Length: 335
Image 1 (spheres, rainbow, N blue to C red):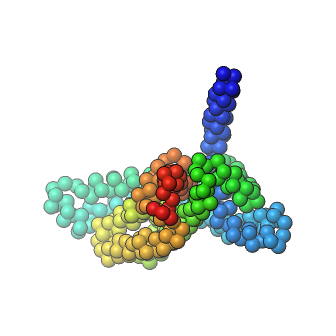
Image 2 (image 1 turned 90 degrees about the horizontal axis):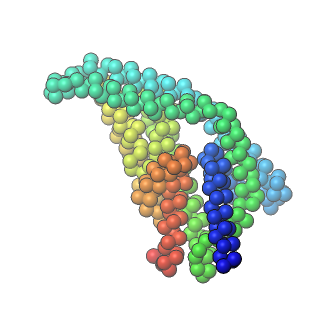
Image 3 (image 1 turned 45 degrees about the vertical axis):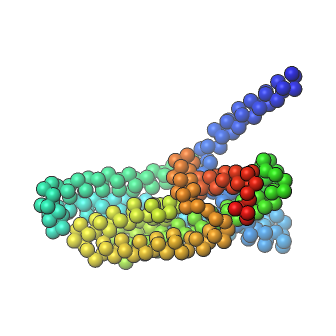
């Protein structure tokens, strides 16, 4: 009886401490996740350096390289996004205000017998106001952002040095048959690599390519629109049209037929290439991942974890499915 009480007390204590730990980590969860992500992506570089110098110096060198290559350019990009967001909102407001004066909208209003242009204008203004106002609000939280970035680099530093040990300890706790342990480790590594590299690289290239299209056709704030497309590209098939289709329709409704149609057609071709050709080539090198788990995981993850949930959500769902598959005795290689 005493042993049973001890187990119950220990279980409740672990639950309490786990809950408190989640509350403590939650304000900076995104930064912690990005620190782990950066460590995962730069670990091959660290592994090359660590053979030539002490682990501490190798980790610090990788941090410096990451700061120069990724973080500093990102600061300038996000700073520019603030002004570009305001410019994008001004573009939508200006274009929407002239709907009723265009031949296209006058014909449409006459056909339906109502002020469609006015309704569309108010809808677009509300939508773009929500989208464009979110970027300055995120960047304005300077204090917590600075602390979060410092924590992110600290997590990255220790993850580079001790990451393999963390992984081995976590893997040892997984409730799978011992005979499947190594294969499970390989599958988890391949799937994580496929998700991270496939999602991040594909989304970034999609945003850059579509941003160039916006710039070529004279749309205001192409950097902002490219960033938003890259962000929504984490949602396969469904995300990016939310950005470029309304932009193209706005131009069409203002009688800029060629520019509007070209933006929709070219961006659709870009999305098709990256979603159906480029992304599968990268992801399939790592593991077979169903698109539905990526979509549901990205949406649900973003709601629960914020921006980092775009990556963490699909990873959590796929890890769950992988564990269930191994526990049922049908590993990925046998499925």
